[in-house]
Amino acid sequence: MTDQHQQVDALLTEHFRYTPLSLIDDIINTVNTIIYRAVEAIETGLFSIPPRQLGFGVTKSSGDSTASDVDEEAKAEIENGVHQLETLLESTVDRNFDKFEIYTLRNIFTVPDELVPHIRLSHYEGLNLPLPPNAPTPESFVTLRRKVHETKKLNRALRNIHAQNASLISQLTSLLSPLSSDQSASLQASLSLSFLTSHPAAESLGLSFNFPSSASNAKQAGPLSAQSQFLVTQLPALREAVAALRPKLRTLPEQIGHVDWESRREERRNYIEDRVRKVVGKGVGENPPGLRIGVEEARGLESLTANMGGEG
Image (cartoon, rainbow, N blue to C red; front, side):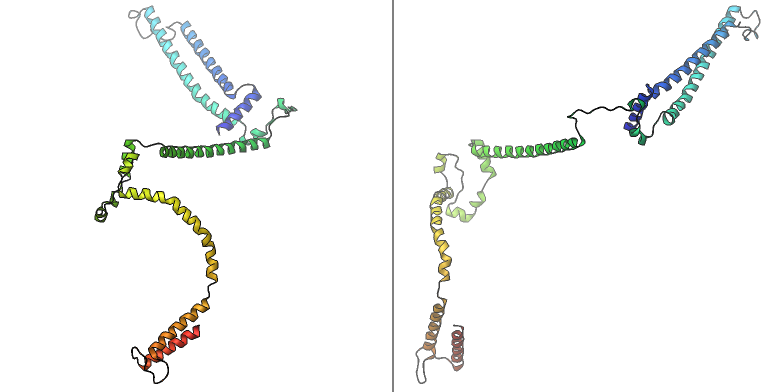
């Protein structure tokens, strides 16, 4: 709303060659000048009239007051009355011309907001200003705005990457830099693994966990540290063993695919039959060695053998 009023004021100022508010101020100042002149003329006229004609000193006897006293009384009364009249006229003018100013700005010196962009003043008629060859176009403004937006977006992304890289560099620097005695002590206190060696079983085995801070302290490390160092030294041999087993692992599925499962089943069936013959016996009238079993158990073993033979 404020921008619209500013545009209207600028348009009217350019049209009238003066601001609307300055015209209203000139009218109010002119009225005030007329009031001051009228009040001054009234004061001059009252001072020119003898005091006794204005009624001063009439009620008093001639012996009670002198001519000078009457003149002083008349002068004071006239000055006071003129001052009150001037104040009354000024307040009346201010109150009424404030209303006049508001009415004039709202209803006379105004242009509807929807008409402001479509008004062309007379001194702009027929005016054709040639544009320079490199003048920006609406398309160029849109392209430039997009470039600025993408640039800001890229700047934010680069700032985030820079912060991540700075954090990573600080972490790597802290890992590569040697620890001081205070830092190693604080690290050992923060990474305490005493619960691994505080158990009675660990104490019976003599397990301990120490952080060797130097080569001399590494010799004094406990059994757990020595075992860890031994495992680290065996890692290259373990890698070589794994590398040697990989070619053999590739041929393992092919070997499994060539297994003769039929011969394996035949061997199992023959083994079971042989064990059954030893228990049951072969033919009538034989007294096979071993435990004697009942008829029902023998029939169960025969059915089991027949079923296995059918599976084979």
